[in-house]
Length: 543
Ligand code: G1P
Ligand code: ZN
Image 1 (spheres, rainbow, N blue to C red):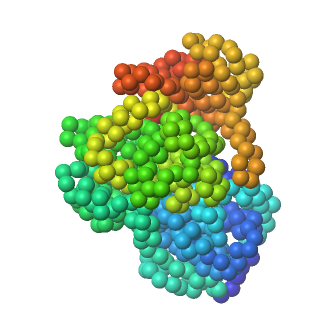
Image 2: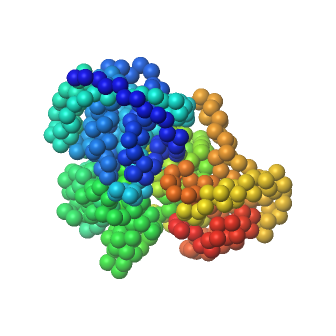
Image 3: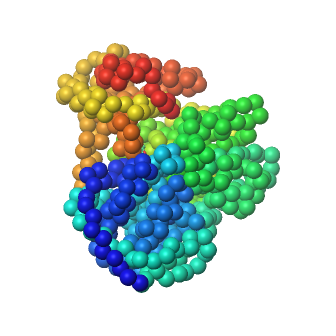
């Protein structure tokens, strides 16, 4: 099979963001755009020749043609074997699981996560390393450097590979193995959770629903919940992965998972509801007329971990991203284990997990996970909750309110201002930065500023430093506000404002978070001039 060397010229916009290179589909469809990025990835890696690569995506528009291109390029670049999910499908956590299980040197995951799909939607390519996790910054910067000077790429001339039939085929010197996208992942889940207990729970009068939002978890959720755990047929809704996610926004939050939210906040709501995102790494957990804030979910999973077989020996430590609420810190304190605060993005958990400094970690953005893979894992979180519910035989609401009673409640909310003019967003952040040194010790409204900084993180394992990770303003009573710009959006800028206060008094735990946080919301606008600079009097999404 002939290997072609094709001349190309660099694009100037191939810097990987929080989760790989993410662009609108028409950008990825430009001649050589995908090829340049994939070749730059191979160029920046050493010692992969003859070894195994994992490849798959969330099934969005452009997934299949991209897989065909990548397979031909992998063959031309000397990869020994590529494992592809059947139909080109692999959820992000399942890809991570395969990389680890089959000792692959890495994986290419095709997804733009929770961003909409379709011909005008988003697409993305993310490289994961041999531990199964997103490439660390030194790898992504090497890829980016390569994209700036690339002049040629390699590809074999061959027919497209049949992605729908399980089994092995040869593409030049490389073996392509189309694997069941679900089986290995489902096996891993069965090892971690008490499937027997969950099966019993689902056999009784407990009712649940799982909304896969026409994204990648459909086949996984059907296999695990309906087939393996005996949930009744139809438990999984929107379970057919569609190239445009049925026109929806595959993000499991209160705004975009509206059908599920409507069901769960109705008079005939089931006991438990969950949703996951485009590529299956996020989760939202709901009880009957009850929303579980993801920061609380993380804290609760940590506090109840020993009820679950895979974690029965306890946790080595926990970690949360900086903007995530400090609810899990309180659990760690009680368990007498370390709690790490990392920058936003799953890649920062990788070293801590590899070194067994932590067992469980999570982000406020509906991401929770553990050392079982190196990605956050939506269905894992759902199974964790089911296992806890099966053990405790209480409702979701009872479990959460009991948790607040024990630890106090960290009121928490995130306000997103999407599609803001980039120049204005940068001006806003610069304005905040210019105030940082004056703020500590100053009164602000009824609060006194304790510290104000632009978060910087030194990785405790490899010493690498990541700075400018978001502006934190902390008050003497433990309340906080955090400002940062999204690294995953593809249109304009998204300003994220994170608000947190702590309430030990049980009598006040039933307050609405927006009410409880009102004084901080007002102050945030005063300090950052959000309305004046963005022209918005309301956030696009409130979580
Ligand atoms: C967002 C979330 C972040 C998450 C990332 C990938 O990034 O805030 O926690 O790791 O998506 O799922 P952002 O757009 O804020 O950069
Ligand atoms: Zn995702």
